[in-house]
Length: 363
Ligand SMILES: C[C@H](N)C(=O)N[C@H](CCC(=O)O)C(=O)O
Ligand SMILES: [Mg+2]
Image (tube, rainbow, N blue to C red; front, side, top):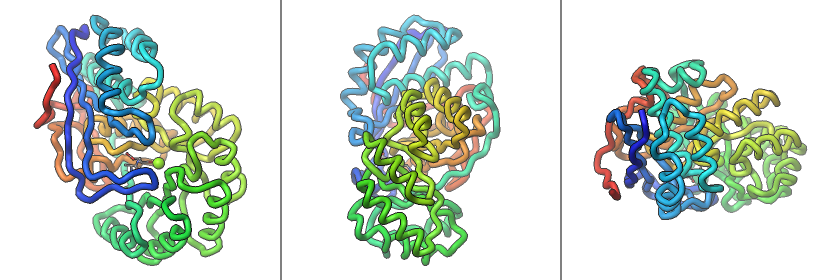
């Protein structure tokens, strides 16, 4: 099964409601799709999310990285030799983690098809059903409380609350939400780098003092500020989770060796795909640190791939794969089934993706 071509296209899917974080406001998922074609007629699908404010990757840069660097480096290689493909893929260009993720996902899709097995079984096969949280966008306290109540009524038992925008309002946001959903709903918060280390400690301590139970705080401080992240970790009881601070396996070693965070968030768009994400899970196992598998604003191709990884590895104990349920349409035929909080993987080989509607390929 040899790679003969990589086609590149794009999809645009409107969101149900605007997605708002401390970093950005978005109304639709506009992602790059790759389709790897083999000499045996098999097709592997992948997806890249151009999340410039987090990865630095834009749509144009993703296309350029694949066309000018990745495609020439892996065309002609046999899917049987996954190792060689991954060495060439990751050696073809530095950074560009989203472009690498899209191609890595399509290659794993083909690897599963080659072996006649769903990818989660090839990666460890821990389970085939997982439960995701849902994100509550940052807005005024009352609007967030209303969104939280609606999510709980739709069956979600864990909410990921976006904060970090206008620090003075964050305590009111959390008080209002906790009151609205009651004591039994799990609340995790994501500041998306919106606080200084001092603001983070002060705000989180106020939340602790107010008796607001919080599962963990995600990325309280700027991505590069590992000292600041450690300061928060050492000075509040709420566990911390590193997101934007941790892209690569080397980042995982640096953060875990210093005990700068209590938990880590793996995203295929940051790690450059499953190959490196597996290295991060191994590092986390060595340090005994549990992981979350997360996503950017992504549609069902790449989130299906992330769900396979999340289902395969027992060190991944938390799931934030709500991209597809935030979308108002699903252009992907096949893949995992996303039914609100429940994600069920199929038993078809690879990722079970058959086609994507409304896509325009470049060549
Ligand atoms: C969609 C997911 N639940 C999420 O919140 N991801 C964000 C980044 C999303 C983006 O801006 O595309 C995160 O965990 O920071
Ligand atoms: Mg985050």
